[in-house]
Length: 267
Ligand code: SF4
Image (tube, rainbow, N blue to C red; front, side, top):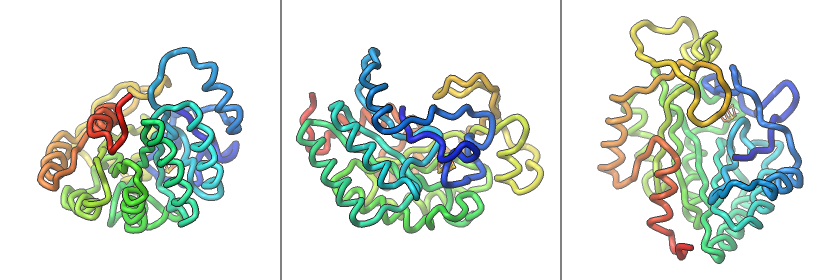
């Protein structure tokens, strides 16, 4: 996993989603230039078959959207599938650049996978400005699909204040634009910083959570993990009815995309 790193020494990301672990006990990735990222990847000896541009910041949010796309272009030299995730809305010119890169990767039998993150439709404080409106991001999901990218609706994380009906509405708006839907549990810090931001006050009683370390990062903090099995089951069932594969983890989602190939010859 790579990213452009923190936006600044005091701010990880252009955006300030109150549920996001970067606002709590999360150690930022190193801040590296694109050349440094490429050099570092060249030294990685463990085999890898995909590069994630994700992590501790939105590498495509202004003012770094062009830099994020330049990073994707630089990473294409590794001849691996590339997945990126964003809450930003890109310009037509930037979409055209993604379409060109996608075609190049397809020519090498590789996928460009674009994830558009949408956590809510009616709780704007969860994705406050300058995060673009959720409907604009959902429109971009369709644009990714039209540009030939494998497109993923990243409905992440599932939050206790968002109703099932709202998740169904988001899925409805993604039909025809998303190839896959991804959900995710919510990791909240022990000090309650993220809960206060999400609930805008005290944490309501009775919401179940477990406690463990992150399963996607090496930090050793103990997190409160909200994993709403009823919501996950309901969303999975709804996506199934809409003909959309649903996953809680990206790895099986990638496997599904590869199996369905999107015109890419398996290598
Ligand atoms: S855009 Fe992503 S990295 Fe940035 S604050 Fe929101 S969830 Fe965190």
